[in-house]
Figure (cartoon, rainbow, N blue to C red):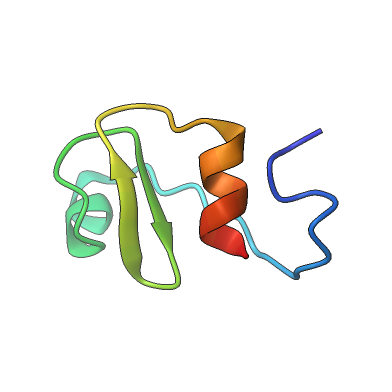
Length: 56
């Protein structure tokens, strides 16, 4: 089960792989996670619990 499943929220997951697009989103170190345009994590893989908290 992925982190957002079971929260009852709609979400769209977009995997960005082109460097200019990554930087345009404000991520300077990969992997990065951006939620609603806000960089929540970069440079490490966050825990599922952290991701669920950001999506609440």
